[in-house]
Image (cartoon, rainbow, N blue to C red; front, side, top):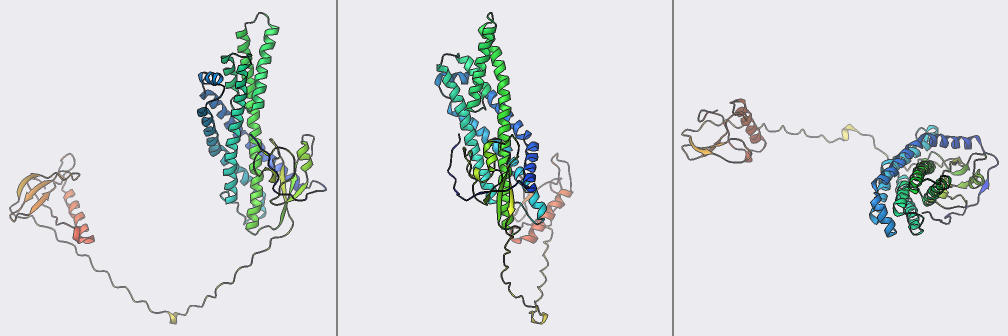
Length: 432
């Protein structure tokens, strides 16, 4: 699920003497953003888990219990669900968090521009998104696998365990185990306190209680993920924003200072980090599992961590020198060679209208395909002619159609005389 990676950077650190007003402000702004944004991912995550629970049938769960493992098809479906969740919900929220983290930098430097499509931002989003899908899908698989092992304990029937498992889909291993223990405790207590109660009745009441507990667990888990992911993106965005500002020559050498709330709710890890200062690109030195690669470069230090970083400019930017420009000679009109006027284009030759040839003899309909009604005629010289009546689809005479056709052919003769054909208007067989 998670892994530990040795810090890539070993830099000396020192403690700041006292939390500054600026350090408290960055912390307050992060927490205000988290309070505003957390409900959205919580809602979509709990809805996703509910959909996953509804998608799997009790028959499939019973088969998994009898086989001792969840089938690959179901696991793949979960991974696809989480991949879609990242693309549809998490990625846009990560971008929003990064942009919010750069609001102060933009206010201080009006010419600053945060690029959410930069290589650094996209690299983190794509790599972290893939890691997140892998980790959460693996946690879910481990939770279900752990519950399947209870099939061999004899404490549950197959149907009983299937119902218990379904309600916990989306939880991690520890949460799923806690839910199953809660179910057993409720069932046992009901039977002990109510000697006349049927076991099936106790099971049903225990399942209802465990389902309510599972819903609470899902909300807690969604809140943990939402807080952690939004804090991670916010702090990564702030870090990437400083790098972009340095590339834009707006700020110089910067160090980053860890900031956490100085109250009784702070954990020992974050309490020890408060005020610690390291160079840009360096890792903070703290113990604990590394949830994702690059985690120790910025907060969070652990799930639900709400710490932030203060970036302190130590040296002003070193302005880049502008290379020598080519000397542009003044333009002298006398040096300009006269440009000859282009010749006038030749006037187009408009072909004359064809007169009706004498001695036209009807030879029947011509089937050319896609041209409407056409008739074949031959004149006295043996030349074949095609005649198209000027009429609507309902065979209503409309003379203007003939003139439009004639005009079209004449335009073609102007554009490309080699492909043009002679055309004219007239009356044949009682039709115009």
